[in-house]
Amino acid sequence: MVSRDGKPYRFDPGALCLELTVTGGPGAFARYEVLHEPADLIAWAGRSRLPDGLDLTVCADELERARTLRDALFLIAADRAHGRPLRAADLDVVNAAAAGPPLVARIAPDGSRGWAPGATGTHLLSTVARDAIDLFTGRYGHRVRECGAHNCHLLFVDTSRPGRRRWCAMEHCGNREKARTHRARHAPTNPNPNPNPNPDPNPNPNP
Image (cartoon, rainbow, N blue to C red; front, side, top):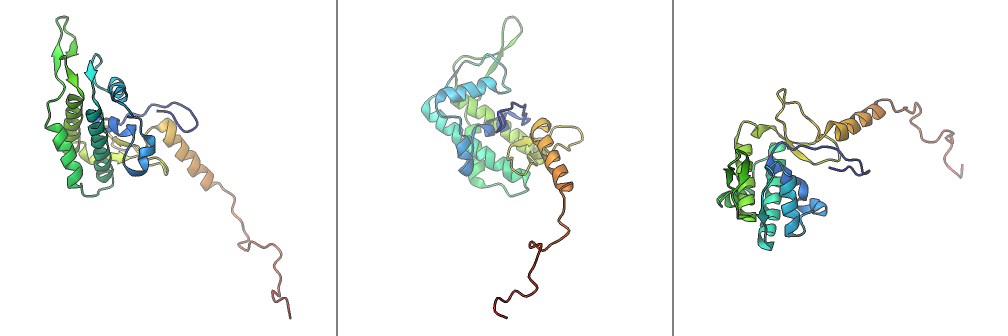
């Protein structure tokens, strides 16, 4: 990830499905959209936590369905992070994507892991949706969180043993929020609550 001032930092959302949520989002988050053409989804898959070597083909319809799935995952994760009921329409999108055939892994003659040929966007979306179902119904489903910074909405799953992760990245939002709290705590206070240092004892202009 890259901060607003151009500094790169590492953000690990902790799950494949949540990696997709950083590509944009519904409503106001549409301004962060990066999936503009099929090649963008292919590039995202190559940067994701999926093993290397995936030979992927994506069509325009699959790209549109990827954005729809991404938005549903964003809303589900945000609702889970804030303890809100999950909406049936969002769950329907995930379940529909998961019903398709997933990516198929295979073992190569040299013993390495690879992918079956003919992978499509539909296979990719099914794999992402199944990962989401595993996450939201699994042992870490209650640990899906939104970054604790006042102006960051990145979503992640806290898989740490103590379960006390608050920030998208300590070197980014964690440090910024600590500095912000420090400044607020040590800000000088005005002992005189009256904004006018020389108040007129007789404000009536016509005594």
